[in-house]
Each structure stands twice: as C-alpha cells, then as structure tokens.
Image (cartoon, rainbow, N blue to C red; front, side, top):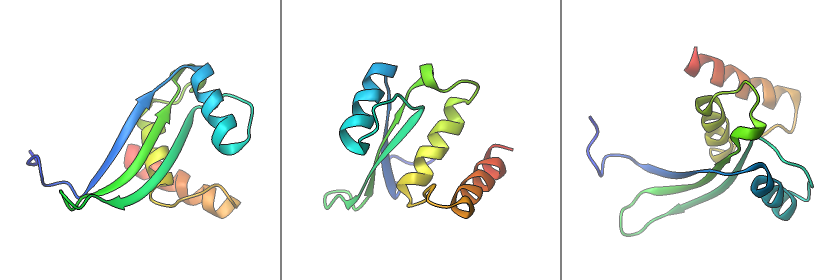
Length: 103
C-alpha cells in the first residue's frame, strides 16, 4: 500500500446532478447542456507538499449511460494530463489508453 505522502499528484472527484453539470458546462464551456464528465485542470504545485494539484473531475452519473465511474474518472484524468478531443487522432489516443487501462 502506498504511504500517505507517496503520491506525486492530487485530483479531486465530484459527483453531481445533471442540473449541476449543465450549469458548470454553461459557465465554463459556453455549452448549455448536461454532459457525463468535465475536467478542470490546475497543474499547480503545492509548496507545502510538493505534490502537483491536477485539478477537479466532475462526474454526472445521470448522464453517463452505460459508462462506468472508472471510465469517466479515467477520461477526466486524461484531460487533466492534457489530452483533448480536438481531432480524431486525439480522441483515438484517449480511447486507446482507456481500453488498455480498463481492459
């Protein structure tokens, strides 16, 4: 088991309702619709711990359909590490990593 201070990165995960994620999506992305997962990267290093604060992952189970929490978490985490959906190649790279990690 990893010790309390062994991780280099921190990320927060929040589970919200469809209304809450719709509001966040509108405020931060200008899209007035609910979605399954949003990621808000920080990338700041906490001087007290030396850990990189990756940011927040917001998951809406109501919007997830058949996707598992694990899938949505990993999808959000990849966004925190800089992966995007900007091109088909980018999306394919994200999908490949998710399939490799989750089997």
